[in-house]
Image (cartoon, rainbow, N blue to C red; front, side, top):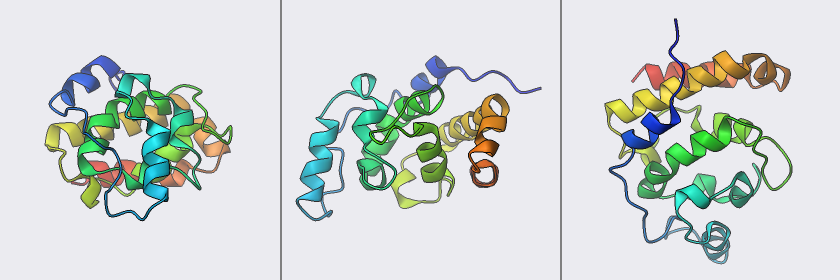
Length: 154
């Protein structure tokens, strides 16, 4: 039986990561890097909304530094679980599933330890359990299943 996902415990797991001085990879070309930094506004993770992450086609999620991604992960999981919508009005959940389905081997996730990787895996399992039917209707169920395998396989 799957245990319910506890967002407070997830936040504790990532508490070792402090807010970085900038969120976006400094090697990203300007003006996009500046636009993405401005979108996130240097806000602490608790103040960020799905709207701040733009759209699946244009937004800062793919360009976060490893420190920023590790710091923001608890909030990204919170935003992916309910009905949070991005700037285009799409559910942020699908953007999260798409972005994190590759698993923890991506260099931008290099700062995560085994316990933090387990939290992300458990969260993806939570999405499958609680929202699986909806995810399937949106045609993201195969991607979510792949993500779970990738996070559990490490």
